[in-house]
Image (cartoon, rainbow, N blue to C red; front, side, top):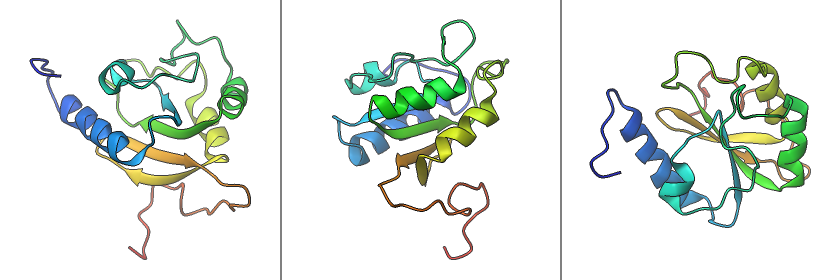
Length: 142
Protein backbone atom coordinates (compact mmCIF):
# COMPACT_ATOMS: atom_id res chain seq x y z
CA UNK A 1 0.00 0.00 0.00
CA UNK A 2 3.09 2.22 0.00
CA UNK A 3 2.48 5.47 -1.83
CA UNK A 4 -1.32 5.12 -1.96
CA UNK A 5 -3.28 7.90 -0.34
CA UNK A 6 -6.97 8.57 0.18
CA UNK A 7 -8.81 11.21 2.13
CA UNK A 8 -10.21 9.90 5.41
CA UNK A 9 -9.44 6.75 7.37
CA UNK A 10 -10.02 4.25 4.55
CA UNK A 11 -6.40 3.10 4.33
CA UNK A 12 -5.71 2.74 8.07
CA UNK A 13 -9.01 0.87 8.42
CA UNK A 14 -8.14 -1.42 5.50
CA UNK A 15 -4.67 -2.04 6.94
CA UNK A 16 -6.31 -2.98 10.24
CA UNK A 17 -8.42 -5.54 8.35
CA UNK A 18 -5.31 -6.94 6.66
CA UNK A 19 -3.47 -7.27 9.98
CA UNK A 20 -6.47 -8.99 11.56
CA UNK A 21 -6.91 -11.51 8.74
CA UNK A 22 -3.19 -12.31 8.63
CA UNK A 23 -3.19 -12.98 12.37
CA UNK A 24 -6.60 -14.61 12.91
CA UNK A 25 -7.85 -16.23 9.69
CA UNK A 26 -6.03 -19.25 8.26
CA UNK A 27 -4.93 -18.65 4.65
CA UNK A 28 -6.83 -21.69 3.36
CA UNK A 29 -10.22 -20.65 4.79
CA UNK A 30 -12.73 -18.88 2.55
CA UNK A 31 -13.71 -15.28 3.19
CA UNK A 32 -16.78 -13.45 1.88
CA UNK A 33 -16.46 -9.66 1.98
CA UNK A 34 -19.67 -7.62 1.73
CA UNK A 35 -20.01 -5.35 -0.25
CA UNK A 36 -16.45 -6.09 -1.37
CA UNK A 37 -12.94 -4.78 -0.97
CA UNK A 38 -11.09 -4.34 -4.25
CA UNK A 39 -7.52 -4.73 -3.01
CA UNK A 40 -8.04 -7.41 -0.36
CA UNK A 41 -6.97 -10.48 -2.35
CA UNK A 42 -4.17 -8.66 -4.12
CA UNK A 43 -2.79 -7.33 -0.85
CA UNK A 44 -3.06 -10.58 1.12
CA UNK A 45 -2.13 -13.05 -1.64
CA UNK A 46 -5.21 -15.10 -0.74
CA UNK A 47 -7.31 -16.77 -3.41
CA UNK A 48 -11.00 -15.87 -3.48
CA UNK A 49 -13.43 -18.77 -3.10
CA UNK A 50 -16.55 -16.78 -3.91
CA UNK A 51 -17.28 -16.08 -7.60
CA UNK A 52 -18.12 -12.39 -7.01
CA UNK A 53 -15.70 -9.95 -5.41
CA UNK A 54 -17.85 -6.80 -5.48
CA UNK A 55 -21.54 -6.83 -4.68
CA UNK A 56 -23.22 -4.12 -6.68
CA UNK A 57 -25.83 -4.12 -9.41
CA UNK A 58 -23.27 -4.12 -12.24
CA UNK A 59 -21.32 -7.32 -11.44
CA UNK A 60 -23.38 -9.43 -9.02
CA UNK A 61 -25.76 -11.90 -10.71
CA UNK A 62 -26.95 -13.52 -7.45
CA UNK A 63 -29.99 -12.95 -5.24
CA UNK A 64 -29.55 -12.79 -1.48
CA UNK A 65 -30.68 -16.42 -1.17
CA UNK A 66 -28.23 -17.53 -3.88
CA UNK A 67 -25.36 -15.74 -2.12
CA UNK A 68 -26.11 -17.68 1.07
CA UNK A 69 -26.32 -20.95 -0.90
CA UNK A 70 -23.02 -20.21 -2.64
CA UNK A 71 -21.35 -19.37 0.70
CA UNK A 72 -22.44 -22.74 2.09
CA UNK A 73 -21.52 -24.69 -1.04
CA UNK A 74 -18.06 -23.07 -1.24
CA UNK A 75 -17.38 -23.61 2.47
CA UNK A 76 -16.98 -19.92 3.25
CA UNK A 77 -15.86 -19.79 6.88
CA UNK A 78 -15.55 -16.03 7.39
CA UNK A 79 -17.77 -13.06 6.62
CA UNK A 80 -16.45 -9.50 6.63
CA UNK A 81 -18.98 -6.69 6.43
CA UNK A 82 -17.65 -3.26 5.56
CA UNK A 83 -19.62 -0.66 7.50
CA UNK A 84 -18.97 2.47 5.43
CA UNK A 85 -18.02 2.66 1.78
CA UNK A 86 -16.36 5.29 -0.37
CA UNK A 87 -19.23 5.09 -2.90
CA UNK A 88 -22.11 7.54 -2.71
CA UNK A 89 -24.65 4.88 -3.71
CA UNK A 90 -25.07 1.91 -1.37
CA UNK A 91 -23.65 -1.04 -3.38
CA UNK A 92 -26.16 -3.53 -1.97
CA UNK A 93 -29.21 -1.32 -2.44
CA UNK A 94 -30.60 -3.27 -5.40
CA UNK A 95 -30.00 -6.58 -3.63
CA UNK A 96 -31.63 -5.63 -0.34
CA UNK A 97 -28.70 -5.26 2.06
CA UNK A 98 -30.71 -5.82 5.25
CA UNK A 99 -32.30 -8.99 3.84
CA UNK A 100 -28.94 -10.41 2.74
CA UNK A 101 -27.25 -9.65 6.05
CA UNK A 102 -30.15 -11.18 7.99
CA UNK A 103 -29.84 -14.40 5.97
CA UNK A 104 -26.06 -14.54 6.42
CA UNK A 105 -26.20 -13.89 10.14
CA UNK A 106 -28.08 -17.16 10.66
CA UNK A 107 -24.92 -18.99 9.51
CA UNK A 108 -22.30 -16.70 11.06
CA UNK A 109 -21.55 -15.31 14.52
CA UNK A 110 -19.81 -12.02 15.20
CA UNK A 111 -16.29 -12.44 16.53
CA UNK A 112 -14.73 -8.98 16.14
CA UNK A 113 -15.48 -5.33 15.42
CA UNK A 114 -12.78 -3.31 13.68
CA UNK A 115 -12.90 0.41 12.81
CA UNK A 116 -14.87 -0.09 9.57
CA UNK A 117 -15.43 -3.84 9.44
CA UNK A 118 -17.46 -6.41 11.32
CA UNK A 119 -15.92 -9.90 11.35
CA UNK A 120 -18.09 -13.02 11.53
CA UNK A 121 -17.16 -16.70 11.65
CA UNK A 122 -19.32 -19.60 10.44
CA UNK A 123 -21.20 -21.23 13.26
CA UNK A 124 -20.11 -24.71 14.21
CA UNK A 125 -22.78 -27.43 14.07
CA UNK A 126 -24.89 -27.18 17.20
CA UNK A 127 -24.12 -23.50 17.86
CA UNK A 128 -27.23 -21.64 18.89
CA UNK A 129 -27.88 -18.11 17.71
CA UNK A 130 -27.74 -15.58 20.52
CA UNK A 131 -29.75 -12.38 19.98
CA UNK A 132 -26.99 -10.26 21.60
CA UNK A 133 -24.08 -11.54 19.47
CA UNK A 134 -25.35 -10.13 16.17
CA UNK A 135 -26.79 -6.89 17.46
CA UNK A 136 -24.99 -3.59 17.24
CA UNK A 137 -25.56 -3.02 20.95
CA UNK A 138 -22.50 -3.40 23.19
CA UNK A 139 -22.41 -6.46 25.41
CA UNK A 140 -23.04 -5.35 28.99
CA UNK A 141 -20.83 -8.17 30.31
CA UNK A 142 -17.68 -6.75 28.67
